[in-house]
Image 1 (cartoon, rainbow, N blue to C red):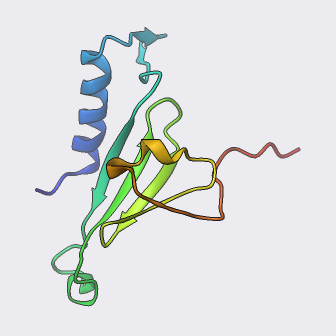
Image 2: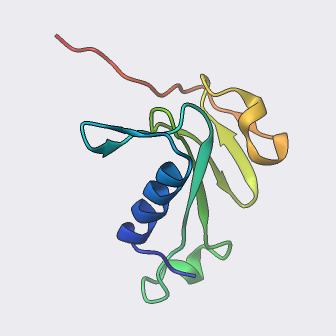
Amino acid sequence: MTHTYASVTGSILKRIREGGHGEFHGKPVCPPDGQFQIVLYPGSNSGLAVEYMYGKVRLLFSYPNLYLEAFSSTEVWYRFRNTPADIIPGGVSEPLHLSLGTTIVG
């Protein structure tokens, strides 16, 4: 099933509202914990489907801060250095020697 950006953001907002996490200045507030996945598929007309036979990449995001925490390709999960191993679906992952986060400049 193909989802557009609007349907992905709509499903995230639906989960937040149904979870009763409330609003701040009229905007929904993300849950205090948990993750969600976005699955990317190559378009059938892009030429990538032939080159990349596995055809999809899973991105694991954190609800509290919307950070990318891990990604999966060919059914192997790769997590960033500051991502706890126990949040990875299936519990098995390869650590990367990279960390993601915010940087204060100035």
